[in-house]
Image (cartoon, rainbow, N blue to C red; front, side, top):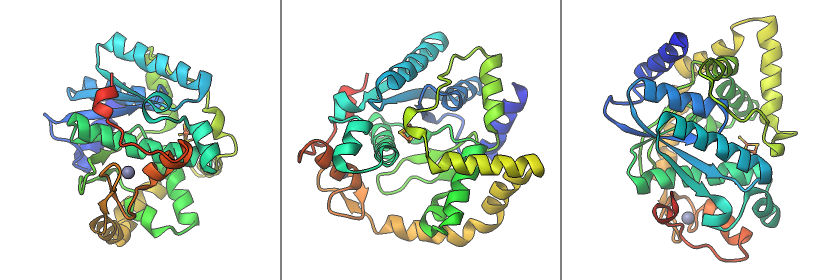
Length: 287
Ligand code: Q46
Ligand code: ZN
């Protein structure tokens, strides 16, 4: 317990993630990482509320929401909720099918857009996500396999606020998957054990498996891969992200910063909802 708290404290300090009195919004999925992160930040004394996004994946979304609500009630923490089908008009499975996108692509886009929009509308300057060391190393592996410079430029434990984007932080970057599971077990945090049914065949999981094979043969290689990139190589790509953000214009539908006239999320909504994209007024629908 002490180790996990210390690693989060150190990540916050090393990457200058948070000021002591800053309000934080945690993106909560009902899984071990986000619930453990919410618990640790609140134990460290931050004013931290949760936001659960219902993806419309039948039983899985219902079970995830129940875990998030149960934890919030137990800890007397505030949980906001957005439900994609109810508040936006489509769930990731049906929406992705109609829009001819992969469910994970529609899901990732919706999460990025709605978590940021909710943080802006609810007045949270910082959004924290539960990406752990295993997640970040797997994402880095994928980005490196494609030498995707734009993604490499954005891969950092803290992304500063700019142009309609709140500050994004990943305080679990120094902790692995097993540590987060152990943290939840010790604290009797009931989290959803099942993998999302849409995850089967996901490249991200393949990269995680490959890195675990490397880690077994050469312990420490996963952390070295990630932290040597952050310390020695990330800066070489960082300017690309600055240029990218400076070229953004407001979406004509929702006002979010984008490179096109209508942002990718509103285009997805237009396709998934048969031509209609209406600006989502989250503050009205968030409970
Ligand atoms: S929740 Fe969403 Fe993951 Fe499910 S649909 Fe894919 S991206 S697998 S983190
Ligand atoms: Zn938009």
